[in-house]
Length: 198
Image (cartoon, rainbow, N blue to C red; front, side, top):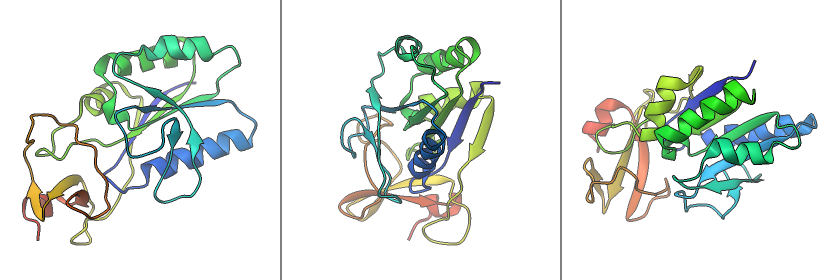
């Protein structure tokens, strides 16, 4: 039975690595998959899903907020699709998440979404993550450890010019960044160290 899965975690929890390993398992069995990722993620090469934890990468279709995912998958479903894997699922719209439920319910294709649950802005949920928490058949946390202590990381802290940023400078919850240190980067923290870093 097909289901909609949401696997979430903080930055650097190896979500993309999990997706790539899942893709490898399906393809190793001769099964047909489609990988998707939001075009908002500009950290990686176009039309690929990559992970900092692995050297392997996989080709994908990039989508924007206006694309109808049900129609996209229906047009690609000439050869049976065994699974759809979506990276950066936090950037989905609520409408697109509902389209994913239709893919699962009517096309009977399992959909596995990977993404952040909450943004760096006081832990607010992303639109896509919030919708997935409502509509997913299965929700799984991919765990990681706080940058400052040994507790489970549940928050994404943005550091800019050495200072924590808990508010959006532009009002936008989407800021594309990486975990590599520089002038502007993200770290995974527990709740205590999110509000009280350093």
